[in-house]
Image (cartoon, rainbow, N blue to C red; front, side):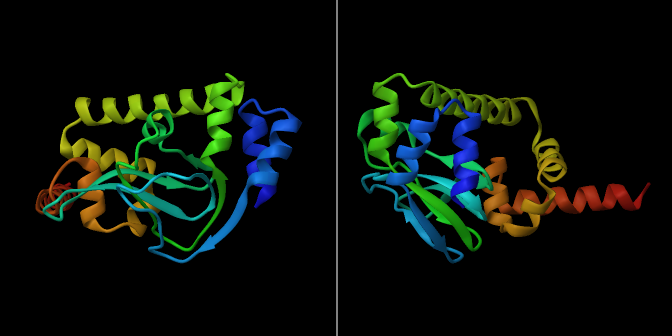
Amino acid sequence: MQSAFSHFLQQHGADQATIDQALADATLLELPTRHILLHQGEPVEHAFFLVDGICHACYLTENGRQFSKEFYWEQEMLIGFESLTNDAPSPFLLETLSASQLVAIPLSVIKQWRAQHHPLYQHLLERQLQFKEHKERFMLLHSPEERFALFGEHFPELCQRITDQQLASYLGITATSLSRIRKRLAHDDDNR
């Protein structure tokens, strides 16, 4: 677990002293499916590196609706930058969708990298911005059918491991719309 985390840090600009300190402060976690790492509205104390498994971040509304923010899989950092930069409670819930191995890093370590203008922090921030711009483009430039097809092309294994509700929410549609899209695409395939 630690070697994957060390390698990730090194790839993103960390020197050996930074890696050693991060490993000294880190906690290894082995968690079951549907374990809540962070409740929406709670103070954020850790960022996470996902060694193995799948995690899901979502927003919960007062009337019980759930909106998928993001899915995370192996070799990803899970950082709530809004909480990090504003000392605010988490605006989303974070949970495992499969048995998962993670490295928990105290948020104070990430804040220290930020205060020091460490190249590692810069890389992590740029990586997050790239993900956000990619998702924005994905949502704005493609129809719901195109988003479904692209998601399936790029993340076929993930499609098998998440619920229809989670997928629909991530795609910005209802589960009913997702069902209609699947039926329409299956019908189109049958007519070819």
